[in-house]
Image 1 (spheres, one colour):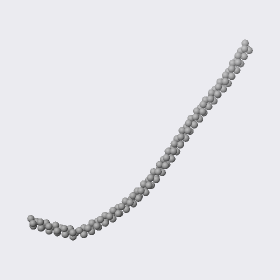
Image 2 (tube, helix red, strand yellow):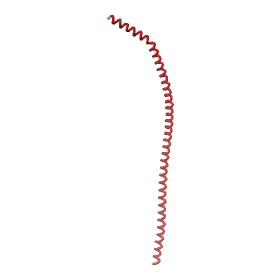
Image 3 (tube, helix red, strand yellow):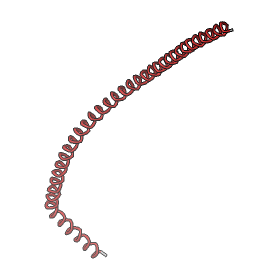
Length: 139
């Protein structure tokens, strides 16, 4: 049993000294890997920052386009509403004008009919009186 403990102790000492002997090489490899990792992270961060700046510029550009289009849309909507209101006003005025013209034409037609009726009545009355006078004379 004692012998087993001695073997274990020697093995641990040997492994520990090997680990200590390899530690500077591992440390320098870890340091190199860490430096490379930091450089890669710095490159990635700069690339991401450039992409972020490009995205910010594009986002601002798109916002400006949206604002412009929104203003155009509002102007078009206002223009449409003004034209729609003007069209309704014109339609009402046209309807009123047509109504007035129709009434005027009907009145003129009625006046012509009345004048024609008066003229024909007068003519027929004259013929009637003439025939009556002729009848009286011939009798």
